[in-house]
Each structure stands twice: as structure tokens, then as C-alpha cells.
Image (cartoon, rainbow, N blue to C red; front, side):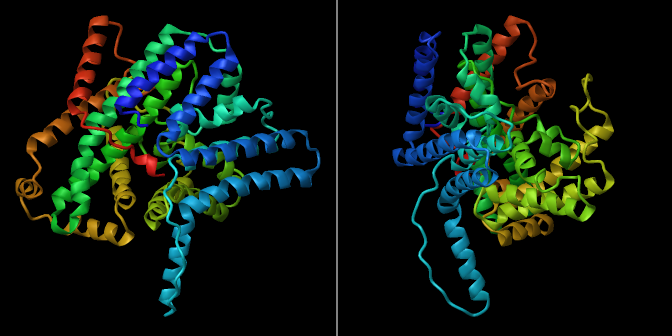
Length: 484
């Protein structure tokens, strides 16, 4: 079930009404959440529900054992079982074919022909997200930072909580489990704010991301026949597409959870207003970047080790982050580019220069801040080419044509692509609106959090966004991060 579907439009109010009709009955509320979550996920493929159940049961019982065990060897063995089960499932479904194919290609470089069976399986939706969520639970218990859950119902609800099950935020048990275990009281103002964030997320996804996707898919599928200006356009529009698509999903997920009286962590904090790569990664996909920080970067020594080991740790976290996104060398190269940009900041010790929002307390940024934001966005957009292209070779060829083939009038390029200038003007118009709202709310939780107190103004904005969504809705389109 997609957030941007008519089914969800019916599903959510039904869950909401049933859930709050059981106010003061915590176990029944959690049971409703669990059944709704399994139903929500099972509509994709009910067979993959077994994977969630396996992960949930495994880590629930291992967590109980980890909490009571005092023997170091036993505790390490229990943690190892959790890692093997969860990463094993992820490895088989997501990376098996990649490793086998890469090994065959490597043998081919040495003149050896080999054949190996590949798995004809579909990647389960959301497996990368809920796998990391359950892993953080057992790791935190092992470290003594968390008490094990003693309710299988509560724990299964934590793992399968439908608003963030498919594409995050990747929640920690320390934040989400206590909210599931404690009674929630209905709060009308909280529900209203949840609806506002859902509306904002749908606007970014349906109106901007899906509009950009049509042109982006067109450009990247036939880039060999296109010229530089339109390739630049394709890269920029993909930057808008992936941000509005993924942050739009996060807004809908967080808003939905807020309707149910549960707070999820902020996953995006206006990353395209970042002034350097380090700040970008503090604001982009926050739940994943902090996960790798806490469970990979810091255990490797973080920045407390020597300079060479610091470089190793930075490259490790970015390469693994790239590989997490998909079984393709392009994702690792995308991570490699970000690591190359991050290391100089570490050398200069400037990677924590920008910890607060840009132009805090001011309406406009300074020319210096504007220049830094533009440079950072340019670097990020360049790296997105490797993220979007089907292979590293295609990425370099795309960039080569983008730089060298630039002597054709832009209007002619649009004509060859059958792109209407009006389509671009509308994308530019709605994207500008989105950035204006996010600029005004850059230190808030979402883009509609600071639109003023006037009820007439707010109603006008809500009506405008709703009409735009209805006008641009053209059927269910999956979110980009569902493939990860």
C-alpha cells in the first residue's frame, strides 16, 4: 500500500478511528497497530511478512536472553546470532546476486569463464530499514544502553509500525518502544499538525517529485542522444526529485505517527540549505547517517584515532552507506565521492563549523552563505548522477556529454525531448514555493510549521496545496527508496 494511493486514503481514517476509540486500552491499541501494520505490508506480498516475523521473534527472544546473561561469551554468541539472522536475510535477498555476478566478472578478467545460479527473487520492500531497526535493538541491549522488551506484542509493533516500516525513519528502540509501551492520550492539536505534515509530504511527492520523474527518466534513458544543457537539467531535476520523493515520504510517515500519538525522529532538515558536505550529511537521511555513526563509525574509533585511521573510518562509513542503498557499484562510487569531499574538511577540522541553521534569526542569507549553499548543492547534484545512472560507465559518459556537448540551443533540445516549456515553468514555480516554505520553516519540523497565525492565510495555503495535489495526481507511483 502506497501513501499516495486511494487505498491509503481509506485505510488511515479507519485505523485512526478504531485506534482512538480504544483509548485507555493500551494492549488493544497496540494490537490494532500491529494488525494494521501487517495488513499494510502484506498488500505488497504477504509472503514477505514471514521475514518480519522471523526478525521480530528472533530479536525479541535474543534480547530477553541478552538482558539476563552475565557471561561475556554467551552474550557475544547471542549478539552474533542476531547479526547472522538479520544480515543473512538482508544479504540473501539484496546482495546475493550482486556478489555472485561480481565474482563471475572478476574471473572473466583473468580469462576464466564461469557460470553460477542466480536467485530469481524480488527484493522485499523495506527490508534494509526494519533490519537496521531490529539490529540496533539487540546491539543496544548488548551494550547495556537498553532494557529488553518483555511484551512480544509491543516489540512486534515496534518493528512493524506501519508509518515508518517501508522507508524509515529508522527508529531506535530507545525512542519508539517506550512510546508503544505507555498509554497515549488523544491530542487534537497534535493530530492537526500531523495532517499538516502529511499534506506537505504529499505536495512534495505528487506535485514536484513525480513531475520531475517524467523528465528525469526521459533524460537518463536516452542521454546518449542528448546535449549538455538538457543533461544538466536532468541532473538538477533528479536532485529535486529524490529530495522531494524521500523527504515527502518521511513527512507523511512522521505526520501519520503523530496522528496516532507517537513521535518519530526528524529525517530531513532542509539539507539543500547546507553550507558544506558535512552539514549536508547532518541534515540528509538523518536516521541512517546517525545509525552508521553510532554502530559503525564510533566502534571503529571515530575521530579519536590517528589521522590515517580517521580517513579509513570516513571512507568506511560512506562506502557502506552507499552499498546499503543498493547492490550496484554506482552507489559505492556515490559514497566514495562524498567521502572525498568530507576528508578535506576533516583535515582542516572544519567538519563541525555549521551546526545551526543557516542565517538563523534572519530572513535572508549573506552572499557568502548563499555561495556556500550553491557550491554544496552543485557537488551533491554531481554525485547524484552516479546514484541515478545504471552503471559507472554510464555516469562518466553522461558527465562527458554534459560538459562537451553544449553547443545546441536549449529550445531545440527541449523540442527533441518533447518537453514543453510550460512543464518546466510549473516545476520551477512549485519547487520555488517548496523552498520558500522550507526556508521560512528551516528550524522547524516541517515546511508548514511556520506559516503564521492567520486562519485565512493558513486555509488558503492548505487549499492551494490540496488542489495542486488533486490536479497532479496521476495514479500510484512508488517512492524511490522503496527499492532500497
